[in-house]
Each structure stands twice: as structure tokens, then as C-alpha cells.
Amino acid sequence: MGNEVDLKIRYRHHQDEIDDAFKWDGYDKVNGILMYLIEKHVKPELIPARSRGGTRNLMKPINLIENGIDDVFFFDEESNEWVEIATKWLINA
Image 1 (cartoon, one colour):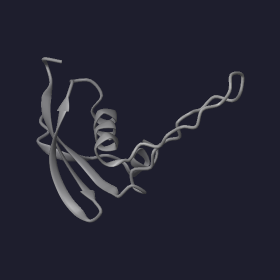
Image 2 (image 1 turned 90 degrees about the vertical axis):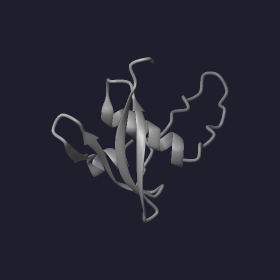
Image 3 (image 1 turned 90 degrees about the horizontal axis):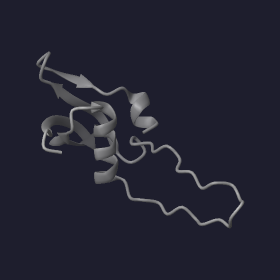
């Protein structure tokens, strides 16, 4: 946890342009950013309980675009450029 770095991100939330900083642990940038956006902007859905032996309750993939998140970029310090996260990752986060 002590090696976290602020990673600049830029995204659109319901037509508002937002510049933010994400605490990156140094491992998986894209999935870390997607989880950060989900925790920040997506309301949790309760999964109904099932009796033992029934089908498992699995979380479905979250579509960030349906939740108003679009045009997600992060700033890559090595190339000194903004890198876009592909729309397919936003649909199936």
C-alpha cells in the first residue's frame, strides 16, 4: 500500500468532464480505474439470497456507459500522453 502513485484520469459523467486522480498500486491500470469508477458512481445492487443447493448468485458485468460514464482516459507518464480505455471495457466492467 505504501507504493501507491496518483494516476491522472479524465472521463465524462453524464456530460460533465471530470479530471480526477486515482491511487494506483502499480499493477493493473485499466481494471483498477474501472473498479474505482464503479465504486464511485455505480449504486450497488443487492443479490437475492437462494437456498442451499440452488444456482449460484453471480454478479453480472457492469456497463459503465449505462451508468453515465464515457470517454475514460488515463495519463501515461512514460509516453507523456492521454491513453483512452476502450469502450468494450466500459461496457463489460
